[in-house]
Length: 194
Image 1 (cartoon, rainbow, N blue to C red):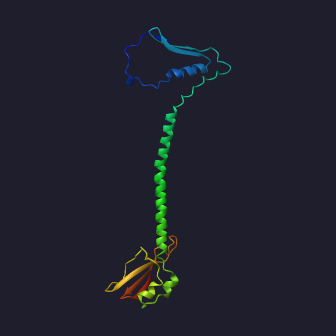
Image 2: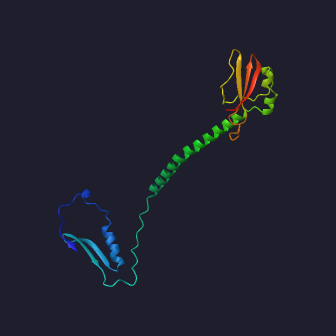
Image 3: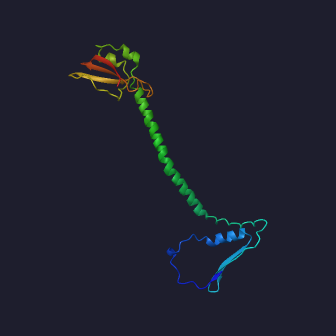
């Protein structure tokens, strides 16, 4: 098939296509055992396909595809650097978050352990004891969990709270001992469960 001079050229955006039409035709003609040719002819373009009347006993091998040209070394190095930078951009914040979370959890566990009042020490406390005697049985710090509902109020009264356990999976997690003092003497001791 041949055609003559082309009319006025169409704009590229008016002609949709993949640019693979002739390649697809060439492949299909070869699969039937035929030959395919195309190219400029006189003032136009020619496409020639010869297809045999009887199909071949076996199909001819497909023309080998050429590998894409190798990238220049500087492009390969740039691509490697970009991959490493992307990996760092994703992994580094995750690692920093994990380390920070572990540090905060360790600090929280350590703080919780320093605020646990041993049940035996709690049992040894007696209402009326002076604050110095009581202080020897208390842990280093108070717990952050302070259920202040029902706390005694009045002049010279102060209360301290201590955890029953530092284990988050213990049923007593969140429970606290409340020790209230008036004028330097233990006036009440209570085990509070929210």
